[in-house]
Image (cartoon, rainbow, N blue to C red; front, side):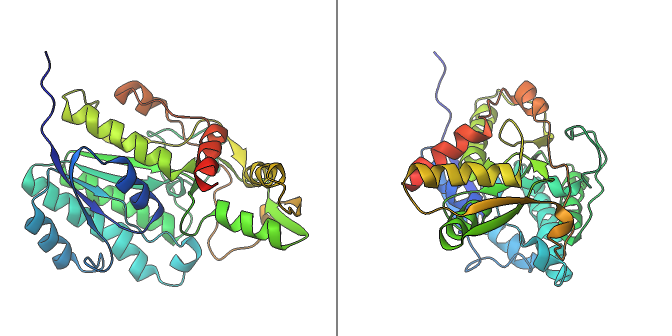
Length: 296
């Protein structure tokens, strides 16, 4: 009979972000969870990062913190590069010194979105803006250390908390008579709960000796849609609840200029994660339904 794995001490960097909140819900029962937010850890201070990791001596580090304000990053690049680029490398160095793995979340924005097929892990990154460039810098910093790691690239993250497309659209659709949404950017809306649940499965496989290869993987919901299609699904839920709902109007990206350029193709091929780690991913619509049911 197989013996149960010993409890883990897991250090989660990030506390109030979408993924961090879901991790705190989904990682219960694995052992001791140490969660560090901005109030106790400034990712702009490498010495602070090192001190915190050394003080807690965890069995695993999960970096769920990031500078995710895509447009704001264009006007404060130094901060974006410090949090998204430098800090992950420092965490990786400390993980390496302890001989433990690091799990880190990255983004579809490391690609320029010009190819027609979904991106695989072997496709060459070519980020368009500061956010994507800083996240790619973080990936490179982690891999350069040689530490055991999982870099999980995802896309279009939403949840029932924080600032995200779901909550913004729910509010606008109930406040306005018409809402214009971009229809020519394609990707997979991914619930933060899906990321947390998949992360738990990855940890369990590693901890029980059933790990796949370390490295970079794509992790999104299955399927694809546009931001307009995502908005339509949100509107359908409001209508089903008998709530007021604006008329949706599809527009091209050029009609909605932003400080940071967006990739038109954000589709990520997640086949490698499913093959290597046997992770089963939900369709984006079913995951959205589960998220909305938690909100009700």
